[in-house]
Length: 249
Image (cartoon, rainbow, N blue to C red; front, side, top):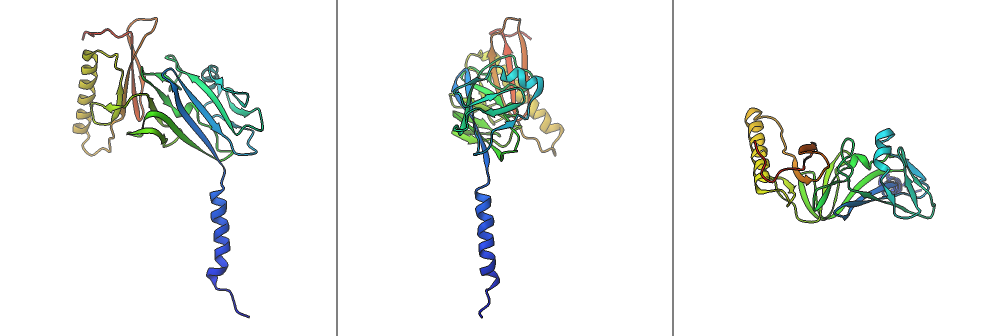
């Protein structure tokens, strides 16, 4: 009897492993710029997955997702959990209106011609498969790069810009966004401080692995007086509330 060679024995096993890997379930999460004042988030769940835990939950999750609006009868998004309500629905879709007052990292912060979003607000557990995050807008800025129409996000801890118009170069050369309503004086001051900060850091820490963040500066109307808000990560968000056209010192 002729014996089988090791390669012939291993081929079916290898084919089975590759086939299983290719068929591994995944949860596809997409954030899409629906309008300058809202984004749409969709969750494509694999068959048999009735729901997923949100990574951000509890009181912060409840406060944030209270404003989410289901776009059909397919699913619900609560403080702690995403749930499929209709087994025939493959995708659960929600409208997330922009808001200027959000706890922690914003879920959809208005920037004039687009939105800033932090993916931690949309992140789900991997109990139904590895989540994959996709971004869709005329222009996307993520991970220090600008993209046309769509891009994949690096992970659930990313901050991104979903823009209706092309991002420009910020003061230190990375893609960013400046609200067109900002006055020339305010814009010049922001660029001056940004350039000076980066120059100082590179001089003081010449051997540090420093990557300048993308900068997003927006002008925001608010019932209170002039003030500054923001947060930092791979996007540095700067929000100027009731900012004067010609700010003083």
